[in-house]
Amino acid sequence: MKNSNRLIPLLVAVSIVIGIAVGTFYTKHFSGNHIGVINSSSNKINTLLRIVSDSYVDTVKISDMVENTMPVILSELDPHSSYIPAKNLEEVNSELKGHFSGIGIQFSIQNDTIHIGSVIQGGPSEKVGLMAGDRIVEVDDSVFVGKIVTQYEAMKRLKGEKGTKVKIGIYRPGEKEILHFEIIRGDIPVKSVDAAYIIDGKWGYVRANKFGETTYPELLFALAKLNQLSMKGLIVDLRGNTGGFMASAIQMVNEFLPANKLIVYTEGRKFPRENYTSNGTGSSQDLPLVVLVDEGSASASEIFAGAIQDNDRGTIIGRRTFGKGLVQQPIEFSDGSAIRLTIARYHTPSGRCIQKPYTKGKDSEYELDILTRYEHGEFFSADSIKQNTDEIFHTGIGRPVYGGGGIMPDIFVPQDTTRMTSYYRMAANRGLIIRYTFDYTDQNRNKLMEYKTADELLKYIKKENLLVKFSNWASKKGLKKRNNMLITSKELFEMSIYGNIIYNMLGMEEYIKYLNKTDKTVLKAVEILEAGKSIPQKKESQDDSSKN
Image 1: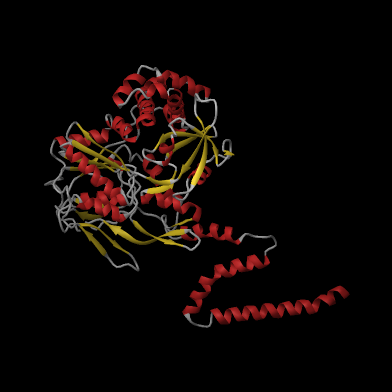
Image 2: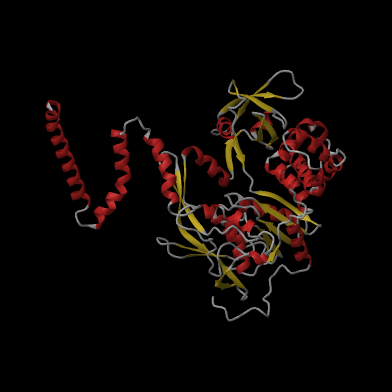
């Protein structure tokens, strides 16, 4: 009882302090004006963090709490507003800026070791003598092999500011000793145009993997190259292109449109409508044009495809695009981190906002949309695509186009699954084909280097009985042999195995050339160009009474 009496003054004091604090809080923040309520909401997180820092039972690293909280807050807005930690910002930006500072190699991690797949021409590593097939085993006088070797850790150690030095220890097959090199880091270009070549002596083909700062200059260079080869028409391949800078897409579309054609317009709550139109300076305004798209084509890719389609400038071939019509503004913080905040929606010239539906924030339904499309058969039949027929718009010549998410192609090409088996799918999904072809290339590099063209290399590797060798190798890795399925998927396996070896030895463009020879979407594009039907025509049966 005595102990209880001793606590009474303390409890009274605490109660008074709490009462004063609560009263002050409500007087300050809820005194009857709206501004006070707003201020209380905006300060609530800071107040909470301060209370946790001062009073929580265990020591808490507040900076980690902030890093974890930022993505959660932005995820409540929409699927594309996002937070980028400082450690990731340079990597994210370099993809779109067209360059980064490093040593100039392409590598993969095999058996906990960095394997150099190729050395970038003219880069710092080529200048000191690094070669494809080398293994990096030391970085700055420290052993760098084993579980520590991750993609993130490798990039962290090899990248760095231009002009800084890094010491590399190399194991080179055939050499008894570790070779040591000191490399001065430099600017390494990040190409966004993977291939630019002529098909059948007259049809240009350009594939862009993103819309970055250098994509437009790369396109101009590709067009100049193809024009020197007497290009009669062009295929622009945007399949799998997830987008990038809207300005880059606008510049590229401008090359193909006459003056005063609307390319895209943006509009948001705090951002009034802004139109972007062609200026008539494009070098390819009359060139027959086909654009290839699929479910991986997003954002800036959809701006490009939508502008070409709505202006009836070319034919869109493939499958429905991703459906991202939200514009993000980058905002950086003093600690080097940044957010990408959605500030507007963009609309194609006909008025479509091609953003696919989503509930507030990032929900699983939105994230799984591509899988849902696959399960509903949309990859295989145009009839399975659910367009919003309540949102009907019109192209320049009156062709109806629809809202509801994504750009629907003028010509649908289904995904080819005729030779697909579960055996092939498991081999591909587990990365076994890539691993096998890397090992094969690595072990036979000196012989493979004798062949300078894809046709020469292909002629050689077709004699190597690689399909059987792969099946035996894969069985040792836990993929049980399925001879009947192997025969059914023979063409798929050979295309993948041969293609990967061509990529390893001759690079991306030769790899794409090889795949395109049997690509049904590319073949359809060539067919359209050959028939002179790249400019869409309005069908007489189309309903002219639909509202815009």
